[in-house]
Image 1 (cartoon, rainbow, N blue to C red):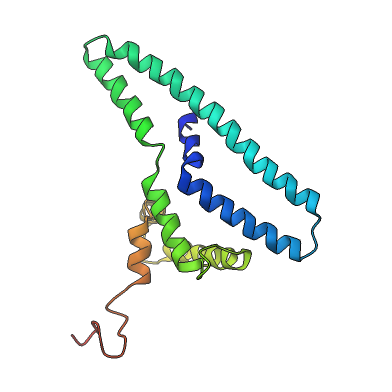
Image 2 (tube, rainbow, N blue to C red):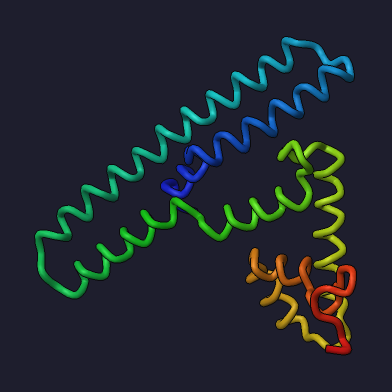
Length: 179
């Protein structure tokens, strides 16, 4: 756990995506008859949580930045190592692989409105459950291999699964098994 990693939720892209998803969910729930005060409370909590994340994340950054400043005044291998660790934590705030996978899932399951509705979310979860069930139940795979595949699953793996050019031939264009 890194308190600085919490700041991932403060990236403009993440705020917009999470806010759009929340607004769509609130609209759907309002249509189902849920009361307005409850929905307003969720919006307030969304804002309050972002403020708390900013406070704790920024505080963690300042504490670690001050420590890194002290380490930079000493020339040694240990100081270099500590500054490198701080740099790694700072770069880890933007979780590029997570955002890329999220964007790909949004593209596939979000529809033309670019928002994952509750129904689309269930479909996405069902797809992921079936995918990982298949990974773990493969008779040619060991538990260790299934664990490694599960833990290192990335956006390019999902893209490869979705766009298998050997299995797809559109109107005779593209590759087929006979090529």
